[in-house]
Image (tube, rainbow, N blue to C red; front, side, top):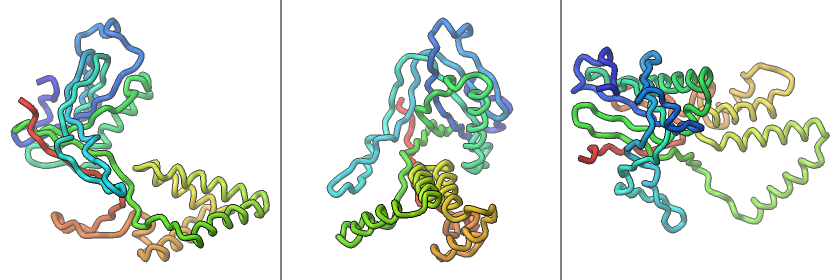
Length: 270
């Protein structure tokens, strides 16, 4: 099986692979001098293919009902075929001989390989991530990932007093000295960027806090202490993660963040 390296597993029946497919831009079939080039980038196998790919898609499992309540429709976790074109497929072990790698470690392997390809070849070689699946090698069961959603516990406040507060803030902002006004505007711009998911969102909101709260120093302690007080966390939890919770499976204490996603596992269609 060219999808996996013979060195990855002693027992493929107790193993799984993580597969990510990327659309490759500005290539035609004539650019593929080999039928299916394959290279290894550490523990990631990169396969370059021209044609059509089949994968399991979970992007449409959420449906909005009345008042925008999200309903899950499992039937929307379905097999799809891509258009014909150039594709980059990155594959790495996830479950090795019965021992599962931590998800962040598996994702990091993929991210590093993606960076190598993009920086040393062309960003177009990994132009767009189209799918991400985990395939169990013993059963062919496939796991797919839904979109990630940021959920806030604070509902919109449409009371007149709350809306007036927004208007007054805008008036007060215009009245600030120019240097302070620019700092607040810059902080708001970074906060707006933080509404995206993942690491970029975290870094953006941290920059927003630094811009507004640390104009003349690089000491993060006052900002962290303020966050800890606001969210009723200890200093370490505020500095390095979200609320601390115990993982029932491992007994470990971990930090968890609001974004969530749904994983679906189905057998591959015969």
